[in-house]
Length: 209
Image (cartoon, rainbow, N blue to C red; front, side):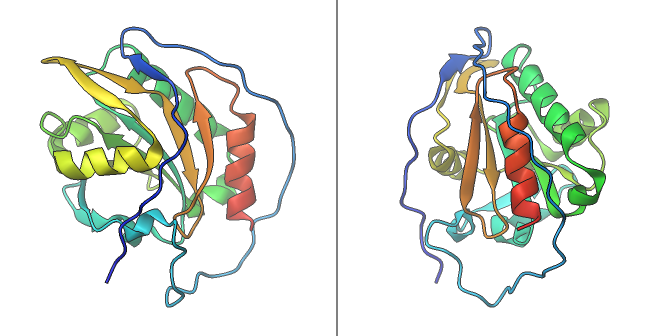
């Protein structure tokens, strides 16, 4: 039986989509080589793995998956909603900027995942159109929507706070999270337009681990 994930992370920035904030990160350079190891899927998951969550999600291609289906990949995850006009486009820009800095040979084991905080509006068709408009159709890009309850539970795991403040607007945290291949959180980037060198290095370190 799957275990429920029972841990909380320290609180992060909580902002409305029309009032984005910024923070500066630290610059750090390193180069690593991609390892050729394979994942033992029979191995028991770590207690803090996000893959213990029992929720089912729908992709932009209208396919149902569970988070554990992503096991074996390094996950770079952010929570957004497609009708957002201020903070979310900047979060998407940050994700694209991170992706551009990850060497091509690492992308086969990396998934960049956008999880909707507005599943009622963000249907698979809406997510698919959004992916095409933003040129995010490569295999390493994925959009997910779940039930409101599963979305809220997942946000708690990421320490992402969000609240509907109008029929078309949410206030929400601006956090990009990196999970290792076993679904354990290893790094978080807070804010908009921050230096993402540490995030890129965290991705490279986990892919080559």
